[in-house]
Image (cartoon, rainbow, N blue to C red; front, top):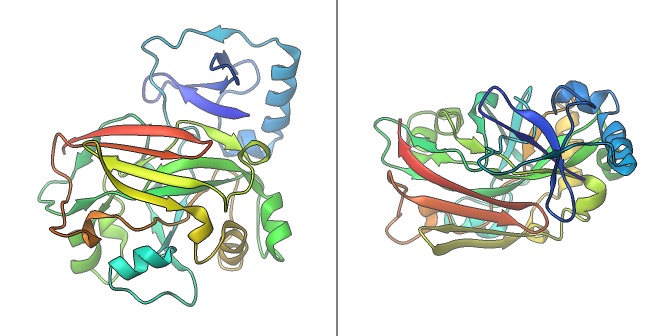
Length: 283
């Protein structure tokens, strides 16, 4: 299934996208797509309602698409998880996952405006595969256990301000947690439909110029390892989001470091997970 949330910010309703592109209202099944929905068997209820053909159709005309998961409890990120990205930034390949947190309030819809922070001169892009947790997870014992707690996947845009991130603090949070810095969606694609998370292409362009063209098979630490690893150090809750890293091609590693400026448009996609498009504005 492809689950999504549609409507104005703060007024989103849950929906499902059919294989032929129609939007069906899930409001009779759940009040929202969030941790409570995932923890209480919401995916099974949605599948049943979809199979029964009882869900009313929504008119997509002018309908905003929000983030597919209502405000996550936490957004956990893995940095430098592609060898080519580590190389372009001059960082050594990490022996263990580089983990940092991102303010859950950064999560916005896939087509919402992204705001370049005041005094920013180094706002950068990063296309990533996001993992959405579907069951409470602690001390998972290996890849099979990790796979069992994944509800699905989505496109994540881990927008970053490099000066804030790398020059203002030894922690990365300042450059990762600015408002609107995590467009997510358009859909939460359930794990059974998404298939092998290590066999997905990721692409990103800025103003029509291709900047990133990577593949999840090039991750240093694959999805199963990341989920299991994180569960050794924190409890993963339903609705939590994990950003799994970005391939090479970010502005920080390009000649001339062409960081984003107001008016720039970024488009990104991941195989089977749809696409995003944001225009950048001023905070």
